[in-house]
Image (cartoon, rainbow, N blue to C red):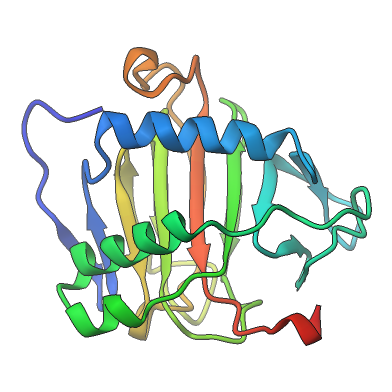
Amino acid sequence: MNALIPRPTREIAPGAVHVPDWLTPEEQRALVTACRAWASGPVPIRHTTLPRGGVMSVRTVCVGWHWSPYTYTRVAGDVNGRRVAAFPDWMVRLGRRALLAAYGDESAAAAYTPDTALINFYDGQARMGMHQDKDERSAAPVVSLSIGDSCVFRVGNTETRTRPYTDIELASGDLFVFGGPSRYIHHGVPRVHEGTGDPAATGMAGGRLNITMRVTGLTDTES
């Protein structure tokens, strides 16, 4: 949902850039349609069980590579044993556009080739604890897209899960990219603001979709 008062692009920390209202309503609806298709399979959306038995409150579906704590495989052995949906070329192009919007570096954007996406769905009660995205072998930036209800996004530091951190709001259509010195920042979602999305604009009745594109650095021989 586009803000009535434009919000400026802002570097929260070196390499961590928030670009508000980046996705158009049409792009948001197209992404919602694609995510709904992936959520139904071949590996369906699910609550991920962590190694110590905890269950994540978000529901997750993967594209390109399947993430299960804390590794990537082509086949979802912890769900149904099927190969995950392929990562589409149009998402590579979207990731490159996103990197260009955040960093303004055409050569870096042209070289960016994400090969997986983790798609998390948050209902009003879902949360994401502070964590690092460090299961990838590549240190290429992470591209994060938000659709639906807004949330509090906590941008931390690379050393600890605790302070110092900065809380920002991510609204529908927002882009957040973290790479370079901020590639391994701790980050999380302590709260989702229910009812703040625009169903007419997104096609979502409620909840929040977060799509994070990454470069695994893996090859099929390692799957």
